[in-house]
Image 1 (cartoon, rainbow, N blue to C red):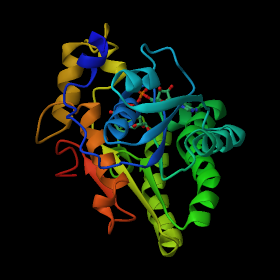
Image 2 (tube, rainbow, N blue to C red):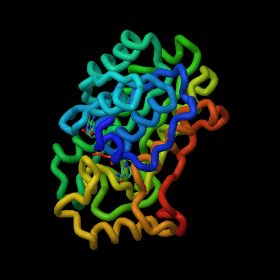
Image 3 (cartoon, protein in one colour):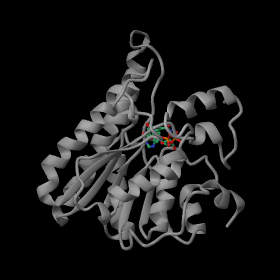
Length: 273
Ligand SMILES: NC(=O)c1ccc[n+]([C@@H]2O[C@H](COP(=O)([O-])OP(=O)(O)OC[C@H]3O[C@@H](n4cnc5c(N)ncnc54)[C@H](O)[C@@H]3O)[C@@H](O)[C@H]2O)c1
């Protein structure tokens, strides 16, 4: 394994086979939370379809997983396009013969006041965070219904539970994901499908640490300190693998009686909100 692979997720432990025999799709898999989760899923025995619009981060996540002894395939997927989401499900079925877990994680935002948003910026965020999730589940659920089981985990945010200044489309779409998670859990529970979401606080992803992990030029110590202190109890930024472990719990059978839940992993950011 090269040094980037070793250094990239130092908090990730050896797998315990918690997803042995499962096939998982991860969107936004080549960076940040998705990248750590795809790697963790594979360490826990899953075969992973790693979906992303970019493959510029080196080594690409599927290669990293293979170096780690796991099984993965990369699919260039834009979650805002239904045809791409249909293809990611087809890839899981064709390459690995099954689909058990869908982790809808791709997302992003634009920081500015709502009256300054262009239609294009607003639609970009809604399309990526909310419609992308809709398209992903619309592709996967017919398959889950046919086999009588399935597991969906969505990435929301603490900003779906509280407000963050100058982040209107992001806050609105992440709040929508929290309640859509509950709604889908209600609709599909009787069909053997569980639906949950994670709400990360401030996480040190590619934007802040680069690859291999290192402080990103331009991200000042003052900014880092501000983000760290926003996670009010633990007073540090979270690492992507700390969210990956929360996702793993929801995606595994260990959470078999949990559905419709928004699992907060935020170093205490929401404690006094
Ligand atoms: N980092 C944080 O502090 C934080 C906190 C709360 C929630 N989140 C959420 O976590 C999720 C992952 O964010 P991250 O911090 O790991 O970001 P990131 O930028 O490191 O990774 C996001 C990945 O998604 C991919 N992506 C973007 N648009 C896509 C599309 N249309 N189709 C497929 N892939 C696409 C990007 O190419 C990138 O690889 C997002 O939903 C984000 O809103 C992040």
